[in-house]
Length: 463
Ligand code: BES
Ligand code: MN
Ligand code: MN
Image (cartoon, rainbow, N blue to C red; front, side, top):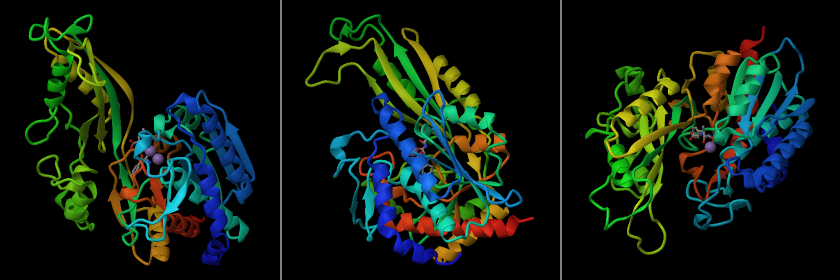
């Protein structure tokens, strides 16, 4: 690759302005109030793929939001890279915690981003990172250096479970045929400590409902004499972890992949400061499963967390009431070999079994997906590693992430190809939180690194 740095500096302002335009669209897939915006975002992605040099760009309608498909096939005998990303974003609430409005992107300096970071919902997850690939394609096409074929598949329902993408992938295996899948929707350790994500956790997400009496009751007249669904629900939830923070659901750990002591020792080499970690979150201690380090707890170990809990009176002042119902949303992050459907069943059976008389419990499975591990002994991983070495001047560290992109395991199952996760965000970029941002340096580093992946991967795999 030649002239990469030149092309970037010549087009710096335009590359920033374009991502800012995309970030102005509130494409929240979870909330129907934004449905036109989600569609607008898909149209913008389509136009930008055309401008960047794709020969074919199509909007594929689904039962939900459309999938934008683009391709540039230069020679059928050359390898094909399939880029996946998403143009939908998480809801921005709570709005009052944003220091600038979520859909009015601004560049502000931070301690970790001295060159500035773009603050907006979706800046890092995933519009900013997805758009790096569009600009990397432009760079390769406009400088006449695209070394292989490329296909894009950008969806609008990642944040709500990718159900329609699963159908699209299963129905379009030939169209989507590729030699490797490339995704930037994860993070790296630090700007001076590049890493490649080699694992994603699986997920089982459920909602539980506990019903007691047939109506809300006066907590004086009935209190103490009937089961209070909120008391019961919190007690049931508390019982899901033991004193070592081990999950108590029978069978939950049966299939968990145990890492060898060598693998754990290798993981422990990644630079990590517990003091900085605690300071950044304003906590005075970390918390988790006994016998595992913080980095192990948030990547190679499964978890169970309440994501939301409600019931009864939560308005101003006091109301003396025993609610008829209590609810919670619970996520379980899973590790390799755990099957999300099986875990969902184990949860349901156990949670119903521990319900005392006097209440009824309903467990509603929401969505889920399998975890994924990227093997590092492949041409694709080596090409990615070499690309980072070229642009960061350092070999990247392979590191498993705690997050989930459930569709990745489905790609492997349906398309039989491996995924390379080249994430350029930082954990502190506040994805899904107020004040999400993405470093300007990271954005351009991504655009710079991606073309080298294409180059090395093509060299390594060309027939
Ligand atoms: N991009 C994230 C996943 C992610 C972020 C993985 C950082 C690793 C590092 C993705 O958009 C996401 O939020 N996934 C959801 C699951 C999905 C089914 C809603 C998640 O992990 O909670
Ligand atoms: Mn994402
Ligand atoms: Mn996300």
